[in-house]
Length: 142
Image 1: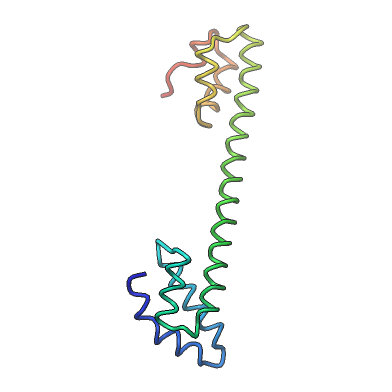
Image 2 (image 1 turned 45 degrees about the horizontal axis):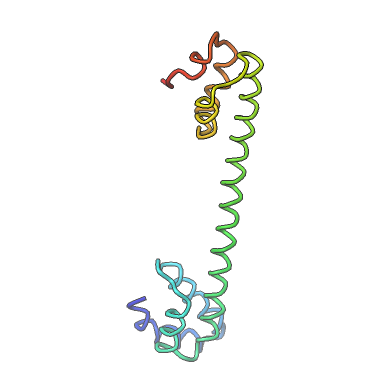
């Protein structure tokens, strides 16, 4: 953002090419993508200062990037949510298997399963098949 003013001539020059707005959009998109700390108000002010004639293109690109960031966040959130849901489902199945095999489960075991990651749950699901005791299932991972 500090050096955005240097780009003013490039923005103005790009705007006056046959595909002006599209060229400016490409430049703005590049600047916005390499800027780690993009803040819309600051971005707009810098564009106005550097090349006032490209403000509309700048705002359109900034808004698109923000929308893409929000969409990416929602997708990442869904993916994480699905992964967490799959682990919770496996824990639920493991809980049923353990209860059928060993009876009521101690609260410490339930807590341990609730905070486990997918790899731990997978090991426990395999171990429950051959375990003689709960300790056999929950022995430290090797």
